[in-house]
Length: 461
Image (cartoon, one colour):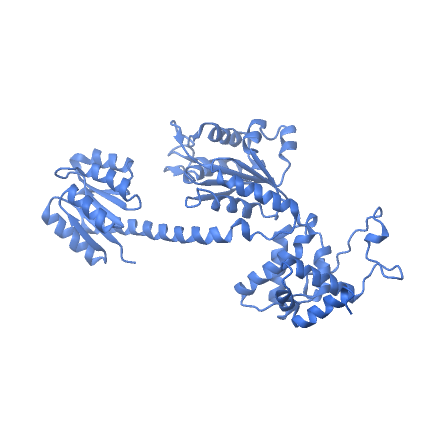
């Protein structure tokens, strides 16, 4: 992609030399010999980058930088300065310049600096595109559920996302979709265009977790040879999602509490606090109240994290969501795998609804993908489901009355194929919002046949 660049320098020979070199690199170049003309060119041409000399007649380069950041904040600015005014170049970095070049410089050095700045523009474009994609993918309206508790939770999450500073604690078993919910909250918030940084606290040992979160200064510990930004710093103006927050050590908990209370932190080995504006979302599959009672989690931190608590029920407690989720995943993997599956046989659906799904939605996704790879296209039959699902025997609850059990007239705990078929038809009808044409396509039958079966079931024939 050809980017445009504005070069502002009061030395005509320097201006011509730089302009020629940049045009040879493929840039569209605009030039100005003073700050006033440069700002007019900025307003007219709206360049992607600017190369600005610090010392200019009239409005100096530092003021030009301020005006560029005010009028065109997405323009990347590289400053140029003679060695004797390098302190002003340092000042320009604090005002938002991407980099600076000390005169005299080799054209190859300038080309490398501008090339890196162009890569930053490429990244911004990719990030913008990915944000728009993520907004669609993680939109609250795309969540598949027929469960009233989940629907209520999602409404609370949607409202909480609009308040971009409120901390949120997401609780639920592994695989229930806590990470997906955290992303929906971020991309539904005013911070959507900024960074979403994710960290699994259970995946790192304590010392590494601390350095990853807060960063470090040179010499903070053995092998700390250069400064490193922590994830909290990288999440500035965006969102930090900490998964399995219950696995934090007491030391890291104390430092996180400071971030929440004071909006600042210190890198390992640092002496000055660093201010950050970050929204923190946490998740856990542990009972944090119990962890607090056992002295393993700070009570004050728990209450700071638990401003808006959200709980995602396990899949076994929301059986009405199993087939709608399965059908949604089927359609998604049809596109990804370039397959043409239409649905599930009644026998397969019955097994899936009765299975407890200990791995929750994550397990369901894996089963659907694996089964679609191994099965023939059309309806997925029970024979192609994993062995643990085919062989699972539901527990019989003795207190349950016989009227709630699936029994045949002889007393055996089986149902007829016709009853299985009727149940599955209604599952698909519910999943499609009672769309009979779509239901017929999924079932692989003609709409007339579907209407005839429904009419017969209701006693019309």
